[in-house]
Length: 227
Ligand SMILES: Nc1ncnc2c1ncn2[C@@H]1O[C@H](COP(=O)(O)OP(=O)(O)O)[C@@H](O)[C@H]1O
Ligand SMILES: [Mg+2]
Image 1 (cartoon, helix red, strand yellow):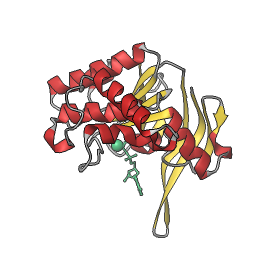
Image 2 (cartoon, protein in one colour):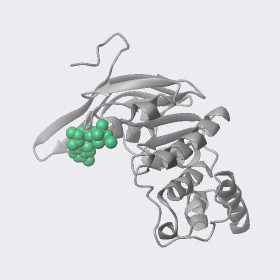
Image 3 (cartoon, protein in one colour):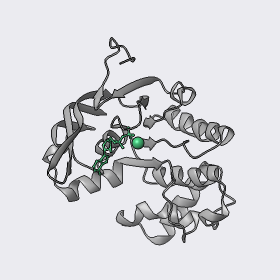
Image 4 (tube, helix red, strand yellow):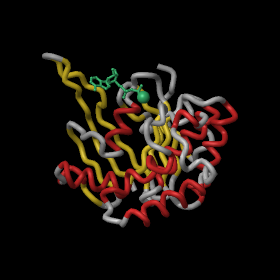
């Protein structure tokens, strides 16, 4: 599903070019469920943003689902992002003035489906995440766990091959975190590829494999985590 070779990312800060990713080699198989761990500032979110086509690498090769992304222009990249990737963020990132249903319908605006079909599909996915009775609630009228389930429904609505979740339980209590993790486990069983960033070992161990990022590099299993 994901093949990265020697991926680097520099951020420009005034006159300085600050290296953040320093040559990431990473493969994630179709259907795999991985957790990404590492210290704050190690580059996990930067890596997720590149995996998810929200940002581009400075150098290196990245192939997603057989497509060499380095050859694509911004519009082609945006299309792949919309069709193949679902995102879930720590702070849910829902539109606060829109209902659960409207939030979940949003990624379908580019698909050319008629409104009624978009509404049916969004409703179906909200039922799937257990929010069939909350379609018309705004985010402020939902608990944190419910808001994250709306975000997961939004991530699922275009039937993506890949779900990326950057600290999806970071703003949730333990019980709600486990509900969200249960939902991700179900999606994994259905064959969706999942990558989740977390700093909680309990959460990470629910994935099939843990990838450690340290100072802009993916650690080999042979490396010692203690630096
Ligand atoms: N847009 C940006 N501009 C400049 N520096 C950034 C930007 N985003 C992240 N960084 C820096 O890159 C490093 C890695 O950040 P990030 O990927 O968010 O780490 P993590 O998610 O592992 O905490 C940090 O030092 C951070 O300050
Ligand atoms: Mg981060």
